Length: 436
Image (cartoon, rainbow, N blue to C red):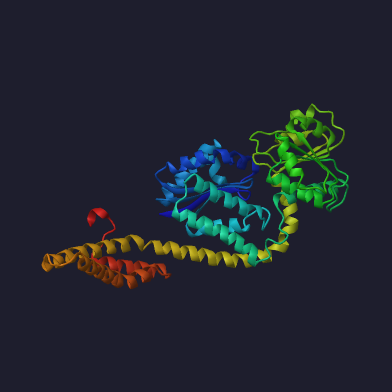
């Protein structure tokens, strides 16, 4: 068995490739079932966010299993594998474990130390368990990743003041508005007419940061107005209007700053839609949805500036340097957590041979017990038989306790392999049931 991860992220692929591999929650069950249907994939889980799509899997064989995962990604994206491969990364075993821990800790995020990724890893665990695509190996690894992410944020200052994708989007708006005025600084948003398209978690964070950056009011547009109204009640200090998505054209005509973050699989704002509007002012569009909510041609129109998640790097770079020293401290914790999991994994190598040894000892015990009982004759009571049987089991357990404990305790892999070979030779053991 072999642990591997294959996928892509903001580090390896532009948004136009990432959006081809975005898997919404309603499609997750089918995707996981498709992966598990391949004989090479023993367990599988999928992490799908705006900045990454990663498959964590327990494979029968490293190369054949990785090929199966790559074929799945090609099928989902509709891209030939040769076009997709330049954007993919593949990590095996120790490297895969280390990568997952770094992701959960926020060390591989576009925004170093972001907190939202940990909730997304938790969601991956929940979906894997709900759809029964993960077993004991991945369940332990994924849950350890979640606990590691919490530990990093508790024991270091990495999570203190960490910005999210949403806060970076608000800062990008401030930066670009400042640059339009000839300033290389973040300007307040008190003069902007702001709209937020969507009412999910990202929209909540957008409103939180808009409120903190001086915004005087906002419009929330959503397919379900009641959901937008429920979100607005959490921001009593920020005047918020809630409108149906059918009012989008009106908002695009009257607002100067529009953020989009919806689960739509097709753009809700296009160049042709904007071209047909009688806009009253210049318009800045910031799209943090993947797949993108704003088509690439929207920014080609005069008076329209359009940005997507890949444009956030300009803002992120301004805040990143101060966090690198804290990140180095977190790396030490990740190494410790990785070592703990690998020690547990190495201990699993002894299980088949230990089980084989127990079975052999049990066969011998049964044979010798029956011989002894047959010699005792009919006068041997049922109670006495139970006492003798318990005695024989106790002797076997006492004999096996020390070697089994030693084999499953933390130790160097070469040392463990040598001990397993010695035990296999001494007791003439085979892990193949047909050879027993």
